[in-house]
Length: 216
Image 1 (tube, helix red, strand yellow):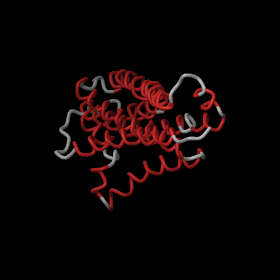
Image 2 (cartoon, rainbow, N blue to C red; image 1 turned 180 degrees about the vertical axis):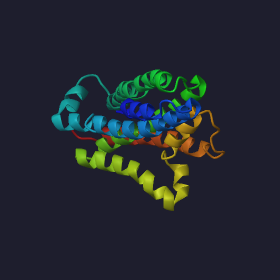
Image 3 (cartoon, rainbow, N blue to C red; image 1 turned 90 degrees about the vertical axis):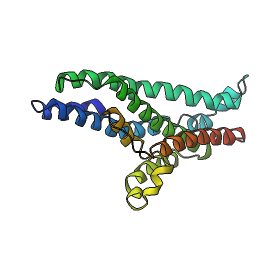
């Protein structure tokens, strides 16, 4: 989906100034990529823990010499590695080929990697949020509704309460696009970057705390 949208935009921009087309493609890649990938990571992992709790497979696994902490951390690591590979690494490789064909240029690797790291941080936060919610709620609708609702709130609330951007991951997609284009981040960009890392760690700990108190 991400690369398909870029292909349509790139075909429309073919023949124009490539030095203007390339930054536009980078902007779309990180903004749209962050949006669709965040939804994808919520939808694909909402049942990761919840489904096993309901089906009883979690209880069966924990009857073996497996700790509850290892069960939760494995969900975080395995889902994160597989999804980031499919939603970040593969689209990025395809994107480099697309820009060469559509704009006859390629992004600078260093700035692009910085933008990719910010994009990964953004997605890992939503992975941690989804796993934490799935350890607390017993409904897939509640898990996906809260996670996706939080993401959409980032498009609305900062217009009225801009100070929220400093304590949420909502600005990370914009930062990723800015960094990938080789531009400087705002002076206060470190705040949401650091706070998002702290929120991610807190959500993982919250999932561990709740799952340790789950009765099977």
